[in-house]
Image 1: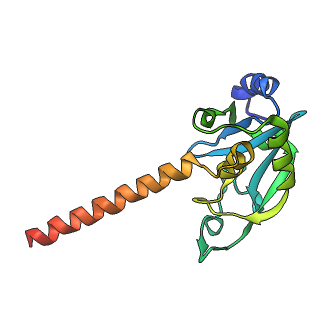
Image 2 (image 1 turned 90 degrees about the horizontal axis):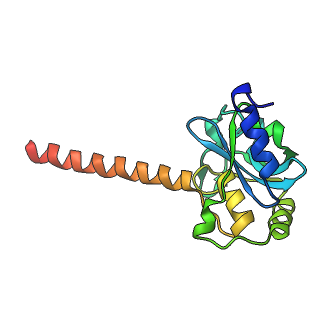
Amino acid sequence: MAAKQFDSHNRSVIRRARKGDQLEFHRGWYSHWAVYIGNEEVIHLAGDENDGLNGNINPSHAFTICGKSFNKAVVKRENVWKVVLDSKVEINNNKDRKCKPRRPHEIVEEAIMKIGEIGYNVLWKNCEHFAAYCRYGVNWSKQADNAMLALGAVVVFGIVAEFFRKKKD
């Protein structure tokens, strides 16, 4: 069950959730995503060994080499309260502004068809990509986009710093 501080808020959010909504579970430095399918159930992409649920991230699940995942993730159908844990949950369909959502029954059908073991990559095939694909038919993760942007900025900064260091010498 959710931590007491979010219990009332989370109950209110789940009461308002409709089939096909994307639920965002705030986990501190990242968010976990799921598709709400009704009756307090969600379908979500979670790494084995509970990755993506409680923040105990296993780094070997984050990357692939030549497209081959180190480990697989599992698309699961679960009670929303098993996924909430001590997180704050929100309905987050903000991508509706840029993408046309499928009809609710189509979103739920897509999510159900994906149940089982699939590949995982934190930057290209994570839980937010999964939820967005079910809702819009598009793999899109703002978290991954932001991580890639930050990584790119660090690389550019490093190159510029090295250029000026060499120029100074």
